[in-house]
Image 1 (tube, rainbow, N blue to C red):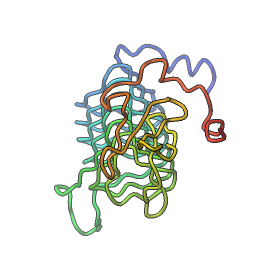
Image 2 (image 1 turned 135 degrees about the horizontal axis):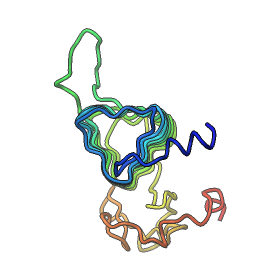
Image 3 (image 1 turned 45 degrees about the horizontal axis):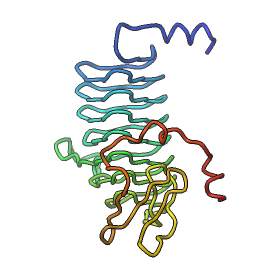
Length: 230
């Protein structure tokens, strides 16, 4: 794309959100202000999309899907009917979502779509597969290529086929170290303290799960490799 073509496609569209000229947005639907819908996307009717979201190239959002604010969807992702995505979720490139556990071409199950819920702040890695009917917990992290077949707890780091929990992860996306004598784990990047308040339930001690990161904590200052090497 030339600079002129890019400038032309970014011209104001008399909308509070941006839609690239190659994308299709069926009406009626709801799209929040500041959202950007890029090349070859298709937003189907009755989809609900929040503010400041980004949809990369070749994303499909089916009818009835509900998406919160500040959600980032990378290239080549299809979000099917039955999916609910809360605020601040990241869906990596070419991850796969589903809405029927036992699909058959000969059996019509349009009224039997299963719900899959992505809680606030969850990350789904590239090329991972999320089998429908489960809940992906707040700020959990699905590693690239994982196949997730069951609920994922808040702050859990899961990987593998089938996916298994291998540890805990912070709101900054950094695996947490082993707990100290008081059971506290400190994020190497954000500095926040985390604790398993009961078996299998992790909470941040310094920031409510529903609170946004303060501006000074929302900008990365070191690469994952640098932090991991410390």
